[in-house]
Length: 368
Image (cartoon, rainbow, N blue to C red; front, side, top):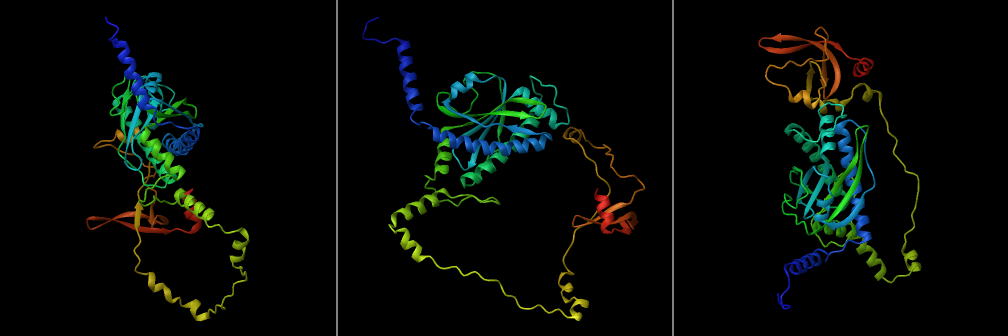
């Protein structure tokens, strides 16, 4: 060939160089990694609490390790097969969020959820086990998203996670995720009491990472209503504005001290409350609550079952309750045990005849 032509290998090398240049136009600094790690740590700790409730076992997640690498590298380094939940945000950050767990660990989670001992890991999952794992990952991601919404001060709503089995390291089956693009990998050590000692990964696309970093740094210009719940959130934008305003006023500390108002502290004074003997004998306010509706319910008995047992129920199934046939039934008002009784038939309807009004000591004894 003439020297004026380049080989196919050289063309491929130029294309790869161009792709890498496009992928590396966004750099994740050490400070950004710390921010992402903190957000991931708090949100996944919430997810671990959710998983602990589902499995009835202690679940620990260690400090995250954050890296900014090509998605293809994540694929190549993955130990397959893995169960992967692909989360798309309906409201909140843009981009995708992936949660990855080994199949053997997923099989243990499914076994524990179905009432097993979690001592036998499997290399393959049945359709039923896959559904159980999908439910666990769904609840984990849901609680993690709620925690993230509190930290970022924004509303986050996710679509139902797409849970699938990845059993190949080839760059396919990843939806709209480009293997040549960089992705933020957050790796955690997962420890489920007496059952699992492994690694769980959370992957953020660039759009998600940029949104999180900007929110946590207070650099966003978003004017949409902030997300609020029972927890107290910090509006980083307001903090930065106040700090800048304070610096620009040019007032000296002496002038500020002069403007401070003196605080007068004194004991509170109250008018004397007079209650007559007649008021004690005839409480007039009782009539105000006589029409308030109360929920009245009768409990025949209770039973505790595992998910596996519940899913096995069908027409004609018989469930044994913890109540003996000759024991009195429990009568509740607004969820409080107040009396006991027995079943009677009134015309064609069931009824309850009260046989015992419970005292405080009896109620406490029954509850124990």
